[in-house]
Length: 317
Image (cartoon, rainbow, N blue to C red):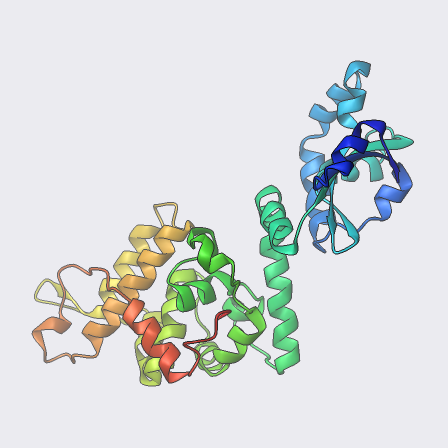
């Protein structure tokens, strides 16, 4: 990689950035950093084909089109930008340049991960799923339910352990990312128990799964609540709903909102835990029959779960 003259002063001052000319084929061989970025970049690139082809017609924009950013992490280079164009170049939808102008940033792994998760959020999601599936295999976990076997449980685990999905956690929490392998091992028994009832994908969204992991850790017998929820076995009496029916109505109402957003999933987790609290009082108790299902403060439940599992002082859980 040939550094440009304009970078000499920058490097003399030990700045963590420099510019260089890079052979196009050499750049192609640099790892993307995330295994699924290439696939997603190509899919996205195909959607923006007209935009990039239009830019390519203007020779004055050639330098812009052939400029990319890369990261230097522990002596290794990784692509940051250019992944969308890479998809077009590999599909011969844009003419391949002989060289690229690259801006090289010296980053630590956490900064790089944060940057990539912002630029390619779908990629991070898929990477999380791949990590979960790999962990299933290592632990010998074989799930039969569609809800669990595909590995989409990372955000549920974040809520169960931290009270919020990753995107809503403060910077102090993110400095100690959840070790997904350890977390799955910690919740292994709860996942197996939940899988046995074949949870309906349409009912068991992230917030419900988070509540299940949390409450089954504390009170395994609450699987009866989740079984009745899964079987749509709610009841109404004297214009009041039992905890299962109350939660089913909340789930139905949230389908009309942007319920995939993190804040709604936290709310759904909180309401699920409130429903379980009412369920535990018993059908003969007036608190069992509800006019309105409110949200519970479930941080004490997280602390209780961590105490039971003896993980309270483990920073990456």
